Amino acid sequence: MSTETKAWAKRQKCGNATTKSVLIELANWADPSGFLSFRKIWDIAEVVEVDPRTVQRHIRKLEEPTVDQPDRLGLIRRVAQYREDGSQGANAFQLIGYQQPLTESGDKPQKPRGDNLSPPHDNLPPGDDNLSGDGVTLLSPLKGDKDSYSPPAPLKGGSPPQDDLGDEGDQERQSRRGTRLPEDFDLVPIDELPEAAQAMVRQWPEGAYELLHEKFCLFHRSATGRAARSADWPAKLAAWVLEDHPKMMRADRSNISMSKASSKPAAKSSEPVIPVDAKNREDTRSDAVRQALRRELGSALYLTWFSKSAILLKQDGAAVSVEVVCPNEFTRDWIFDRFRDRLAMAANTDLQLVELTVEQKEEVVG
Image (tube, rainbow, N blue to C red; front, side):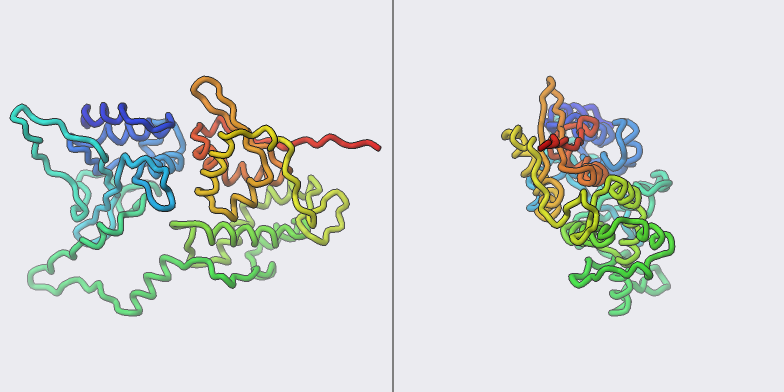
Protein backbone atom coordinates (compact mmCIF):
# COMPACT_ATOMS: atom_id res chain seq x y z
CA MET A 1 0.00 0.00 0.00
CA SER A 2 1.07 3.59 -0.61
CA THR A 3 -0.24 6.72 1.06
CA GLU A 4 1.07 8.81 -1.87
CA THR A 5 -1.01 6.93 -4.45
CA LYS A 6 -4.10 7.16 -2.25
CA ALA A 7 -3.61 10.89 -1.77
CA TRP A 8 -3.20 11.28 -5.54
CA ALA A 9 -6.48 9.43 -6.15
CA LYS A 10 -8.34 11.70 -3.73
CA ARG A 11 -7.28 14.74 -5.76
CA GLN A 12 -8.68 13.41 -9.06
CA LYS A 13 -12.01 14.62 -10.47
CA CYS A 14 -14.21 11.63 -11.40
CA GLY A 15 -17.67 13.21 -11.55
CA ASN A 16 -19.22 10.31 -9.63
CA ALA A 17 -18.85 9.18 -6.02
CA THR A 18 -18.75 5.46 -6.85
CA THR A 19 -16.13 5.98 -9.58
CA LYS A 20 -14.01 7.98 -7.12
CA SER A 21 -14.32 5.24 -4.47
CA VAL A 22 -13.19 2.54 -6.92
CA LEU A 23 -10.17 4.65 -7.95
CA ILE A 24 -9.20 5.26 -4.32
CA GLU A 25 -9.43 1.54 -3.54
CA LEU A 26 -7.21 0.68 -6.52
CA ALA A 27 -4.70 3.36 -5.52
CA ASN A 28 -4.77 2.17 -1.90
CA TRP A 29 -3.33 -1.20 -2.97
CA ALA A 30 -0.85 0.17 -5.52
CA ASP A 31 2.88 0.26 -4.82
CA PRO A 32 4.78 3.59 -4.54
CA SER A 33 5.34 3.57 -8.32
CA GLY A 34 1.58 3.48 -8.99
CA PHE A 35 1.47 -0.17 -10.09
CA LEU A 36 -1.20 -2.57 -8.77
CA SER A 37 -0.37 -6.19 -9.58
CA PHE A 38 -3.45 -7.90 -8.12
CA ARG A 39 -6.77 -7.03 -6.50
CA LYS A 40 -10.01 -9.03 -6.67
CA ILE A 41 -13.08 -7.31 -8.07
CA TRP A 42 -15.15 -8.99 -5.36
CA ASP A 43 -12.94 -7.47 -2.65
CA ILE A 44 -13.25 -4.01 -4.20
CA ALA A 45 -17.04 -4.43 -4.33
CA GLU A 46 -17.15 -5.29 -0.61
CA VAL A 47 -15.13 -2.19 0.31
CA VAL A 48 -17.11 0.19 -1.92
CA GLU A 49 -20.40 -1.56 -1.01
CA VAL A 50 -21.67 -2.04 -4.56
CA ASP A 51 -22.28 -4.97 -6.89
CA PRO A 52 -19.18 -6.51 -8.57
CA ARG A 53 -20.59 -5.69 -11.99
CA THR A 54 -20.88 -2.06 -10.91
CA VAL A 55 -17.17 -2.15 -10.06
CA GLN A 56 -16.40 -3.49 -13.55
CA ARG A 57 -18.42 -0.68 -15.13
CA HIS A 58 -16.64 2.05 -13.14
CA ILE A 59 -13.22 0.52 -13.88
CA ARG A 60 -14.03 0.81 -17.59
CA LYS A 61 -14.98 4.45 -17.00
CA LEU A 62 -11.60 5.09 -15.36
CA GLU A 63 -9.64 3.65 -18.31
CA GLU A 64 -8.15 5.54 -21.25
CA PRO A 65 -10.58 6.98 -23.84
CA THR A 66 -11.18 5.07 -27.05
CA VAL A 67 -12.89 5.90 -30.33
CA ASP A 68 -16.09 4.21 -29.12
CA GLN A 69 -15.79 5.54 -25.55
CA PRO A 70 -14.36 9.09 -25.78
CA ASP A 71 -15.79 10.13 -22.38
CA ARG A 72 -13.59 7.79 -20.33
CA LEU A 73 -11.43 9.49 -17.69
CA GLY A 74 -7.99 8.09 -18.58
CA LEU A 75 -6.82 7.58 -14.99
CA ILE A 76 -5.84 3.88 -15.13
CA ARG A 77 -4.39 1.50 -17.70
CA ARG A 78 -4.84 -2.28 -17.74
CA VAL A 79 -1.63 -4.30 -18.04
CA ALA A 80 -1.86 -7.95 -19.07
CA GLN A 81 0.22 -10.45 -17.10
CA TYR A 82 1.32 -13.86 -18.33
CA ARG A 83 2.63 -16.90 -16.56
CA GLU A 84 5.75 -18.83 -17.50
CA ASP A 85 3.68 -21.29 -19.56
CA GLY A 86 2.23 -18.41 -21.60
CA SER A 87 -1.28 -18.54 -20.12
CA GLN A 88 -3.15 -15.38 -19.16
CA GLY A 89 -2.99 -14.33 -15.53
CA ALA A 90 -4.94 -11.68 -13.64
CA ASN A 91 -4.65 -8.15 -15.06
CA ALA A 92 -2.58 -5.49 -13.34
CA PHE A 93 -3.32 -1.75 -13.30
CA GLN A 94 -1.09 1.31 -13.73
CA LEU A 95 -2.17 4.71 -12.42
CA ILE A 96 -1.92 7.22 -15.27
CA GLY A 97 -0.66 10.69 -14.34
CA TYR A 98 0.68 9.66 -10.95
CA GLN A 99 4.24 10.88 -10.31
CA GLN A 100 6.31 8.91 -7.84
CA PRO A 101 7.76 11.24 -5.16
CA LEU A 102 11.51 11.82 -5.11
CA THR A 103 13.82 10.54 -2.39
CA GLU A 104 16.14 12.75 -0.33
CA SER A 105 18.82 12.37 -3.01
CA GLY A 106 16.41 13.66 -5.65
CA ASP A 107 16.04 10.33 -7.46
CA LYS A 108 12.98 8.15 -7.68
CA PRO A 109 13.36 4.97 -5.61
CA GLN A 110 14.23 1.99 -7.73
CA LYS A 111 11.67 -0.70 -7.06
CA PRO A 112 10.90 -3.69 -9.28
CA ARG A 113 7.66 -3.16 -11.16
CA GLY A 114 5.34 -5.58 -12.87
CA ASP A 115 5.33 -5.90 -16.62
CA ASN A 116 3.47 -7.74 -19.34
CA LEU A 117 5.82 -10.74 -19.25
CA SER A 118 6.00 -11.50 -15.56
CA PRO A 119 3.66 -14.03 -13.94
CA PRO A 120 1.60 -12.97 -10.92
CA HIS A 121 3.33 -13.19 -7.55
CA ASP A 122 3.57 -16.68 -6.07
CA ASN A 123 1.74 -15.64 -2.92
CA LEU A 124 -1.42 -14.57 -4.76
CA PRO A 125 -4.52 -16.43 -3.57
CA PRO A 126 -6.05 -18.92 -6.01
CA GLY A 127 -9.20 -17.89 -7.83
CA ASP A 128 -12.30 -18.92 -5.90
CA ASP A 129 -14.91 -17.14 -8.02
CA ASN A 130 -15.63 -16.07 -11.58
CA LEU A 131 -14.27 -12.57 -11.13
CA SER A 132 -10.53 -12.92 -10.60
CA GLY A 133 -7.73 -15.21 -9.49
CA ASP A 134 -5.71 -17.98 -11.06
CA GLY A 135 -6.78 -18.82 -14.58
CA VAL A 136 -9.47 -16.12 -14.81
CA THR A 137 -9.13 -12.72 -16.47
CA LEU A 138 -11.92 -10.32 -15.62
CA LEU A 139 -10.83 -7.52 -17.93
CA SER A 140 -9.49 -8.08 -21.44
CA PRO A 141 -5.71 -7.59 -21.82
CA LEU A 142 -4.22 -4.99 -24.10
CA LYS A 143 -3.49 -6.47 -27.51
CA GLY A 144 -0.17 -4.72 -27.80
CA ASP A 145 1.06 -6.34 -24.59
CA LYS A 146 0.27 -9.84 -25.84
CA ASP A 147 2.32 -9.33 -28.97
CA SER A 148 5.46 -8.70 -26.94
CA TYR A 149 5.30 -12.04 -25.11
CA SER A 150 7.95 -14.66 -25.91
CA PRO A 151 7.41 -18.36 -25.06
CA PRO A 152 9.66 -19.78 -22.34
CA ALA A 153 12.88 -21.46 -23.35
CA PRO A 154 12.71 -25.29 -23.75
CA LEU A 155 13.75 -27.40 -20.79
CA LYS A 156 17.18 -28.98 -20.84
CA GLY A 157 17.16 -32.41 -22.33
CA GLY A 158 13.63 -32.06 -23.64
CA SER A 159 11.75 -30.68 -26.60
CA PRO A 160 10.15 -27.25 -26.67
CA PRO A 161 6.43 -26.93 -25.99
CA GLN A 162 4.28 -27.74 -29.00
CA ASP A 163 1.99 -24.72 -29.24
CA ASP A 164 1.72 -24.65 -33.02
CA LEU A 165 -1.34 -26.76 -33.82
CA GLY A 166 -1.62 -25.60 -37.41
CA ASP A 167 -4.95 -24.87 -39.10
CA GLU A 168 -6.81 -27.43 -36.98
CA GLY A 169 -5.59 -25.71 -33.83
CA ASP A 170 -6.70 -22.32 -35.13
CA GLN A 171 -10.15 -23.72 -35.90
CA GLU A 172 -10.38 -25.25 -32.43
CA ARG A 173 -9.43 -21.98 -30.76
CA GLN A 174 -11.90 -20.10 -32.95
CA SER A 175 -14.69 -22.51 -32.00
CA ARG A 176 -13.97 -21.96 -28.31
CA ARG A 177 -14.09 -18.17 -28.72
CA GLY A 178 -17.28 -18.36 -30.76
CA THR A 179 -18.38 -16.19 -33.68
CA ARG A 180 -20.45 -13.09 -34.16
CA LEU A 181 -24.16 -13.49 -34.85
CA PRO A 182 -24.61 -14.39 -38.53
CA GLU A 183 -26.51 -11.87 -40.64
CA ASP A 184 -28.83 -14.65 -41.82
CA PHE A 185 -29.61 -15.97 -38.33
CA ASP A 186 -33.19 -17.20 -38.68
CA LEU A 187 -35.86 -17.60 -36.04
CA VAL A 188 -35.30 -20.93 -34.29
CA PRO A 189 -38.48 -23.07 -34.65
CA ILE A 190 -40.27 -23.51 -31.34
CA ASP A 191 -40.11 -27.31 -31.67
CA GLU A 192 -36.29 -27.12 -31.78
CA LEU A 193 -36.00 -25.19 -28.50
CA PRO A 194 -35.24 -27.03 -25.23
CA GLU A 195 -38.35 -28.46 -23.58
CA ALA A 196 -38.52 -25.81 -20.84
CA ALA A 197 -38.20 -22.98 -23.39
CA GLN A 198 -40.84 -24.60 -25.63
CA ALA A 199 -43.35 -24.74 -22.79
CA MET A 200 -42.78 -21.07 -21.97
CA VAL A 201 -43.02 -19.76 -25.54
CA ARG A 202 -46.34 -21.58 -26.07
CA GLN A 203 -47.79 -19.48 -23.22
CA TRP A 204 -46.66 -16.16 -24.66
CA PRO A 205 -48.96 -13.70 -26.46
CA GLU A 206 -49.00 -13.78 -30.23
CA GLY A 207 -45.90 -12.23 -31.79
CA ALA A 208 -43.88 -12.18 -28.55
CA TYR A 209 -41.37 -14.82 -29.67
CA GLU A 210 -40.79 -13.05 -32.98
CA LEU A 211 -40.26 -9.74 -31.14
CA LEU A 212 -37.78 -11.37 -28.77
CA HIS A 213 -35.84 -12.76 -31.76
CA GLU A 214 -35.69 -9.31 -33.36
CA LYS A 215 -34.43 -7.66 -30.15
CA PHE A 216 -31.95 -10.52 -29.66
CA CYS A 217 -30.45 -9.86 -33.10
CA LEU A 218 -30.36 -6.07 -32.64
CA PHE A 219 -28.63 -6.36 -29.28
CA HIS A 220 -25.89 -8.82 -30.28
CA ARG A 221 -25.11 -7.22 -33.63
CA SER A 222 -24.44 -3.90 -31.91
CA ALA A 223 -22.68 -5.46 -28.89
CA THR A 224 -18.92 -5.55 -28.32
CA GLY A 225 -16.64 -7.78 -26.29
CA ARG A 226 -17.80 -11.14 -24.99
CA ALA A 227 -21.48 -10.39 -25.53
CA ALA A 228 -20.86 -10.14 -29.29
CA ARG A 229 -19.58 -13.73 -29.67
CA SER A 230 -21.04 -17.16 -28.97
CA ALA A 231 -20.28 -20.74 -29.88
CA ASP A 232 -24.01 -21.70 -29.83
CA TRP A 233 -26.41 -18.90 -30.81
CA PRO A 234 -29.62 -21.03 -30.67
CA ALA A 235 -28.77 -22.00 -27.08
CA LYS A 236 -28.18 -18.34 -26.22
CA LEU A 237 -31.57 -17.43 -27.70
CA ALA A 238 -33.16 -20.16 -25.54
CA ALA A 239 -31.50 -18.59 -22.49
CA TRP A 240 -33.14 -15.27 -23.38
CA VAL A 241 -36.49 -17.08 -23.52
CA LEU A 242 -36.03 -18.40 -19.98
CA GLU A 243 -34.96 -14.97 -18.72
CA ASP A 244 -37.76 -12.96 -20.37
CA HIS A 245 -40.64 -15.35 -19.64
CA PRO A 246 -41.94 -13.37 -16.60
CA LYS A 247 -42.00 -10.12 -18.61
CA MET A 248 -43.86 -11.75 -21.49
CA MET A 249 -46.48 -13.11 -19.12
CA ARG A 250 -46.91 -9.68 -17.52
CA ALA A 251 -47.39 -8.22 -20.99
CA ASP A 252 -50.03 -10.85 -21.72
CA ARG A 253 -51.91 -10.04 -18.49
CA SER A 254 -51.76 -6.34 -19.37
CA ASN A 255 -53.32 -7.09 -22.77
CA ILE A 256 -50.26 -5.75 -24.63
CA SER A 257 -50.13 -7.17 -28.13
CA MET A 258 -46.87 -7.90 -29.91
CA SER A 259 -48.31 -8.93 -33.25
CA LYS A 260 -49.27 -6.72 -36.17
CA ALA A 261 -52.27 -8.94 -36.85
CA SER A 262 -53.53 -9.27 -33.30
CA SER A 263 -57.17 -9.82 -32.45
CA LYS A 264 -56.89 -8.05 -29.10
CA PRO A 265 -58.86 -4.80 -29.32
CA ALA A 266 -56.92 -2.91 -26.64
CA ALA A 267 -53.53 -3.18 -28.32
CA LYS A 268 -52.61 -1.53 -31.62
CA SER A 269 -49.07 -2.71 -32.29
CA SER A 270 -49.47 -2.10 -36.03
CA GLU A 271 -49.56 1.63 -35.24
CA PRO A 272 -46.39 3.44 -34.14
CA VAL A 273 -45.94 4.09 -30.43
CA ILE A 274 -46.79 7.70 -29.62
CA PRO A 275 -44.11 9.63 -27.68
CA VAL A 276 -45.12 10.50 -24.14
CA ASP A 277 -46.35 14.01 -23.36
CA ALA A 278 -43.69 14.32 -20.64
CA LYS A 279 -41.05 14.86 -23.36
CA ASN A 280 -42.21 18.49 -23.41
CA ARG A 281 -40.63 18.91 -19.96
CA GLU A 282 -37.14 17.84 -21.06
CA ASP A 283 -34.22 20.29 -21.01
CA THR A 284 -30.58 20.44 -22.13
CA ARG A 285 -29.56 17.96 -19.43
CA SER A 286 -31.96 15.44 -20.95
CA ASP A 287 -30.29 15.95 -24.35
CA ALA A 288 -26.86 15.25 -22.82
CA VAL A 289 -28.11 11.98 -21.30
CA ARG A 290 -29.67 10.97 -24.62
CA GLN A 291 -26.39 11.54 -26.46
CA ALA A 292 -24.51 9.44 -23.89
CA LEU A 293 -27.09 6.64 -24.17
CA ARG A 294 -26.85 6.62 -27.96
CA ARG A 295 -23.05 6.28 -27.75
CA GLU A 296 -23.30 3.54 -25.13
CA LEU A 297 -26.12 1.43 -26.65
CA GLY A 298 -25.87 2.17 -30.35
CA SER A 299 -28.55 3.81 -32.48
CA ALA A 300 -30.71 0.68 -32.92
CA LEU A 301 -31.22 -0.05 -29.21
CA TYR A 302 -31.51 3.63 -28.30
CA LEU A 303 -34.26 4.28 -30.87
CA THR A 304 -36.14 1.11 -29.89
CA TRP A 305 -36.30 1.77 -26.14
CA PHE A 306 -35.67 5.46 -25.42
CA SER A 307 -36.84 7.55 -28.38
CA LYS A 308 -40.53 7.52 -27.28
CA SER A 309 -39.82 7.92 -23.56
CA ALA A 310 -39.09 11.10 -21.61
CA ILE A 311 -35.86 11.51 -19.60
CA LEU A 312 -36.28 14.03 -16.78
CA LEU A 313 -33.50 15.07 -14.37
CA LYS A 314 -33.89 16.65 -10.94
CA GLN A 315 -31.13 18.25 -8.87
CA ASP A 316 -31.24 17.78 -5.10
CA GLY A 317 -28.04 19.27 -3.72
CA ALA A 318 -25.15 17.24 -5.12
CA ALA A 319 -27.39 14.29 -6.07
CA VAL A 320 -29.00 14.00 -9.49
CA SER A 321 -32.11 11.83 -9.79
CA VAL A 322 -33.46 10.55 -13.10
CA GLU A 323 -37.05 9.76 -14.01
CA VAL A 324 -37.83 7.93 -17.26
CA VAL A 325 -41.49 8.22 -18.29
CA CYS A 326 -42.30 5.30 -20.60
CA PRO A 327 -45.22 4.87 -23.03
CA ASN A 328 -46.18 1.42 -21.65
CA GLU A 329 -45.33 -1.16 -18.99
CA PHE A 330 -43.46 -3.43 -21.39
CA THR A 331 -40.97 -0.67 -22.25
CA ARG A 332 -40.58 0.24 -18.59
CA ASP A 333 -39.85 -3.38 -17.56
CA TRP A 334 -37.39 -3.89 -20.42
CA ILE A 335 -35.42 -0.73 -19.58
CA PHE A 336 -35.44 -1.63 -15.87
CA ASP A 337 -34.04 -5.14 -16.46
CA ARG A 338 -31.46 -4.35 -19.15
CA PHE A 339 -30.53 -0.68 -19.30
CA ARG A 340 -31.03 0.84 -15.83
CA ASP A 341 -27.32 0.67 -14.95
CA ARG A 342 -26.30 2.24 -18.27
CA LEU A 343 -28.90 4.95 -17.75
CA ALA A 344 -27.41 5.76 -14.34
CA MET A 345 -23.93 5.92 -15.86
CA ALA A 346 -25.12 8.20 -18.68
CA ALA A 347 -26.73 10.54 -16.14
CA ASN A 348 -23.69 10.33 -13.86
CA THR A 349 -25.76 9.34 -10.84
CA ASP A 350 -26.29 6.40 -8.48
CA LEU A 351 -28.44 3.46 -9.52
CA GLN A 352 -30.78 4.02 -6.57
CA LEU A 353 -31.71 7.46 -7.96
CA VAL A 354 -33.14 6.08 -11.23
CA GLU A 355 -36.94 5.81 -11.38
CA LEU A 356 -39.04 4.39 -14.23
CA THR A 357 -42.74 5.19 -14.57
CA VAL A 358 -45.51 4.75 -17.14
CA GLU A 359 -47.35 7.84 -18.35
CA GLN A 360 -51.01 7.74 -17.49
CA LYS A 361 -53.15 8.97 -20.39
CA GLU A 362 -56.38 10.76 -19.56
CA GLU A 363 -59.41 9.04 -21.02
CA VAL A 364 -61.46 11.20 -23.36
CA VAL A 365 -65.17 10.79 -22.74
CA GLY A 366 -67.45 11.70 -25.58
